[in-house]
Image (cartoon, rainbow, N blue to C red; front, side):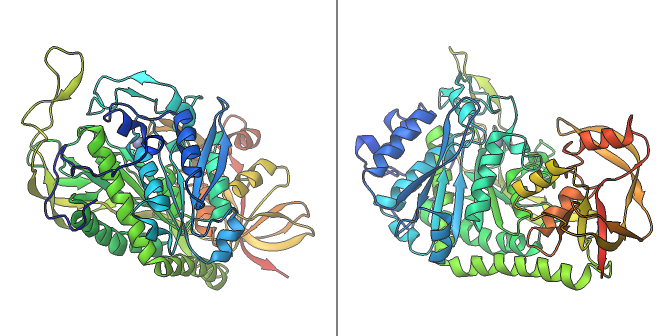
Length: 547
Ligand SMILES: [Zn+2]
């Protein structure tokens, strides 16, 4: 693997021999098939079994057993080996979590992750385990991965020839389940995240046919309610450093996860919205930012070959791990500062009602930037076949630079007071369980508690179609501060905890896509409002505890 690349690789180009030489049992399925195939979940297990026999730096945990009764392994890579989250904490090293195949038709990150695991344990990048523990879950959506279909090139490239499907066995998109945690898969993932507490999470995707000129693109949390410290650090410090490293060491140009708009030449803007990246918490990466942690989504363009897309994910992940290994203490400090500030702000400002946070947001301009693009990218059937390809002369070779408006800066648009705590009836044990699944501390009151606070008065419950889902929306308003006696057995969520930003976003009645939006409270609302009429919102906002 050459370092200090002099040249840049565009379109399908990759460096010769970039994967290195490996014994057959440690070659990935793409390597064994000239990049015509991707792995199934059984082939992943076979590969992990082979790696286990060659290294003492690997521990495997199963995140869950899927509805189709398949396991989802996560490889814990560390030197020396750790076999529990407790050992990881004792080591003082940060945990970095990388996963693939949340969308199985986008398998390049999954395949790259095996190569990364190989490099870190027995290959040329073992030094990347010096200061960090790396957890790799190559296949998150195992059932979708094993539900194979022959593809026709419509994602952009004809390789691999056979692919999994996007949804899980229940037909659900796992990258819309981050708030409601409806699926076995998301709950299993969150159990691992709660236990191991990674400082950084990376989720690898593909963006289908695009007209930008980048080999890979990246984005971070854009939920405006997320603590600004970790996301600003990711955007302002980590992203430029990793981008530079990918260019210098791997010869690739990478940039923000966005698309041109309008889709004509020359485009005017470079837009997160256009790439279906919203300020909502439904995406795993966006939601992870509500935990005061670093979170990154990568999206390769669809039209390069499978080999190039794997190389692009491999390059980005290696450069990222190089960065986190070199800056492990700094990343830990950023995360800890965000945790400490979240708690301190609640303690200092919540009782006076001066602490506020965002319920919704939108993207604004960061200013004009130069972006690599192609004038067109035209899909057409390859002559003599029934397979879609890219028309020669479009979206290939070195791209052009175009000056556009960078519409990727998330800003808040509506806000609300952050309370000192939230209280809800003891009968709502499902809500307490849902909060705990998100790592939010909530407890049943052992004795009555007198509090001052505010109650939201629901005027109407509506369903609004948004992003392909029927989202619940509440009309209404908060009443004046009132004194209440909360009985023993009622649930109380003390907001002086690092997960306060997430708790606020999930529980506020008018958050863009919290528990109300995703229907988590639909049953409770039906009991209260009947056909959707006026009723008090069942979750009381506690301004202060009266002793
Ligand atoms: Zn995807």
